[in-house]
Amino acid sequence: MERLIGTVSRGVRAPIIREGDDICQIVVDSIINAAASEGFGLNNKDVVGITEAVVARAQGNYATIDDIAADVRQKFGENTIGVVFPILSRNRFSICLKGIAKGAKKIILMLSYPSDEVGNHLISLDQLDEKKVNPWSDVLTEEKYRELFGYQKHHFTGVDYVAYYRSIVEEMGCELEIIFANDVRSILKYTDCVLCCDIHSRARSKRLLKEANAKLVYGIDDILNASINGSGYNADYGLLGSNKATEDKIKLFPRDGQVIVEQIQHMLYQKTGKVIEVMVYGDGAFKDPVGKIWELADPVVSPFHTSGLVGQPNEIKLKYLADNDFSNLKGDELKEAIKNYIKNKDSNLVGQMVSQGTTPRQLTDLIGSLCDLTSGSGDKGTPIILIQGYFDNYTN
Image 1 (cartoon, one colour):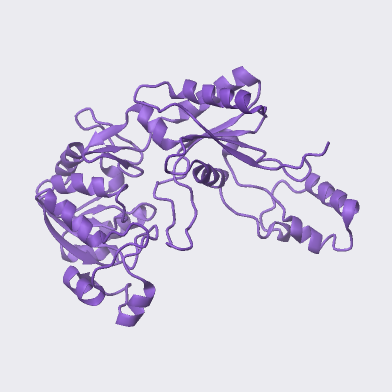
Image 2 (image 1 turned 90 degrees about the vertical axis):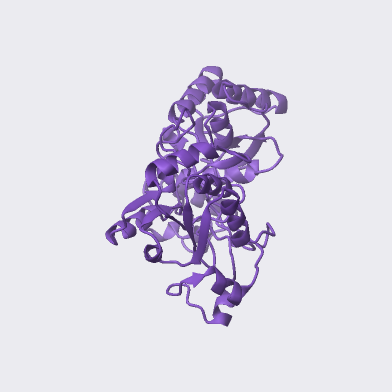
């Protein structure tokens, strides 16, 4: 009988994972038990995703605000620190800011506007137009910002992030000045010691500051990129990808995960005889049309994955074939013509019109986004995702 189902994404429930747990065994057991419970089989090229949070938790990759403060003091000494372009987040940045403020005497906090880099808005573009403010050239003080825009609460969280971040810094006994600008070099009028807190634009920000002769330039990826007094750390990303665990503790992005995904793949092969791809995933890469938030607050969607997930899709657009090459066909004749075209398609369709409209993204970004949407970020209890049929096409 012909298959009538394509890609299927399943959230797989798992035990609550604690520090020191065997994450590989838990993932394998959860997948095998779910398949037996629900009565489905496992196939070659299935994909197992594990959320980065449980990997880091099993590793015990945690640090405290005191650890952050110690590293900040070690790198910046007594200098006034320009903290530039942080995202607006209670979960992501607030705890980092707490640690940074605890390690500093004075901070100049420079916020991008009208939104942060992942789309959390302080104000709207329409408000900028109304007040005739040019965000590319105008540097606003906190006083001027309040005069122009008053107190603005985030669309979803209901938080005024300017007031919220001020309260965090002052709670740590640190002096604070807030400005609003979009040229990273604007901070140099206030201090030449800068901590770049942007995520995806951090390399450019550091380069521009160094070219402008800043004295000290670090990124948030340079904070806790090594252990401080036995703390967790991430050599590649530092504080990037971290999340609030408690009021004084963060969970860092997982590290050393390549051995984990490869071990899970090996264990699943031993159990099933199938070559199953495995990835650790964080935030998906997609944009919310209402809140305007680009979800990707992690440095990458998938920091670790098996080799079969490297690359981009090589797909043709079925509706293009139906409307163009085979517009004179219908029914079974059309179906067979399209199947034959797919079977004989080029191994690289880049630049060909037949692929127009397909999604030109990395497999890990596409599949990781599907994993993130399936698992959610709340109380579903499914930190493991099983995706089947992703690599199938119309001929399978």
